[in-house]
Length: 332
Picture 1 (cartoon, rainbow, N blue to C red):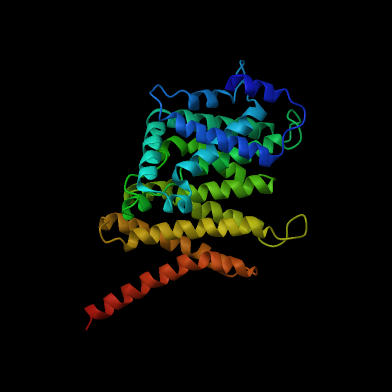
Picture 2 (cartoon, rainbow, N blue to C red):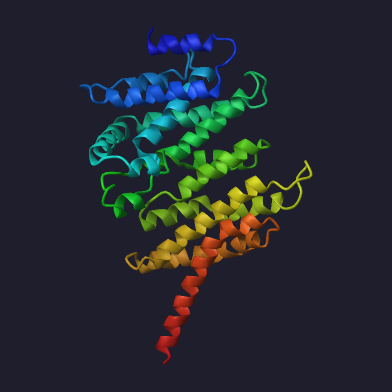
């Protein structure tokens, strides 16, 4: 039976298999996909898998899409986004993984991005509609956003600073995954009634924020995201008790992590003497604007929130101390 025929048969099954079985199948198919790149080109298996997400009329096929998203997640782990796996692999294995990733980046990155965001848009539109069974639409939306995070999370900082990882680069060009439209989708999800969708949107934005980039590009990205304004509004709206009578600490902790990441990225630019002074000045301005939000989280009654936000506040204090020491030396 062909992969396409198997996908169609899967759509016609009654009850879905358990998640552990789906994950095992996805793992096997992702390994098969990687191995297929050792064969002579053309490499068509990935294109075939991506096509399984749609039927002949172009409508999203929930069950097949679920499997493809699991495969794409496992593929990201297999090819290096899992730093623990990467650390124990041989140079030969790392070189092989890098070659496969280069091939996918060159020929399939745009198709992957289009598939993921089209899936997010359509499945999100079906949440609560009753057109799909149970929580299928919400689960697929959550999965797709999580995979978006997988494909932007590879840090160029790591690639540049580790002698064993010099061949690694970002999975995809961030411009494929992050556009004004897709950012707006993530901001919409941050305000969704579903805790799972709120949480995964915050996690995805964290991956976008910490993406390794050149300092001028990072400043441009952080200005466009305007996370200080967005997170501040959400912090105020989630402060105190929710409708259930309990604070949404899980989501608020992700907001604090996002605020911390935003400030830490700015602090790194400020501390990098190789960066142009004008760019560092822009980072300094943005950091000063972000600190009141960080202090707000520091005052949260939930103790773990202080631990999440502490790194950026410590870094900001370090920057201030160095500036004071520099001024004192100048006036001696």
